Length: 206
Image (cartoon, rainbow, N blue to C red):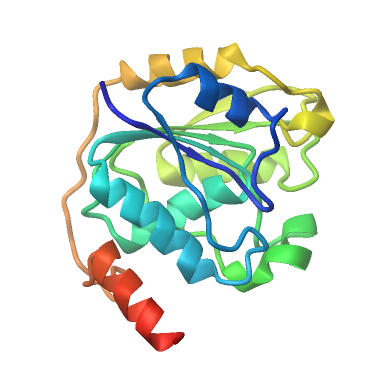
């Protein structure tokens, strides 16, 4: 079976969060731990996610909030990384609203079309991204859009603990035939592998 990478958002996911429940109930799940949950180093976030994908080709992703947005950056920067499918739950907007005030240093959200199966799970009253914006991103990424209605940020504060429906969504997503886009290289794509990038990043900061 494929590894399931659990990617939390800003500050991580607490013990009562549905991602923590998923980790405990999925024997194939791996928690992607960031060195700095305060989001002071966007490149380190991306490198950490990319390294896990590099080491687990074909992994399925279950990401929340800033973690979901980071997946789009990683996929754009290292298009050769193999991703099985991605469930992107309540992605945080780094360009508008609440997200822009706290996360502007993460920069613009890439709009490149994914070459893997993906679904954006969005809420009608998410303070971190409007539903309309989530829909436009899903269209750009070639992802399905799943409407959870008035579900806040789809976290503990919004009443989400265990979330078995999420596992059903990922399972259904994995059944969709995978599409392949032609691989091209442009200036946005990083010629370094995630491991090489991490080594260079460490040397530059020590």
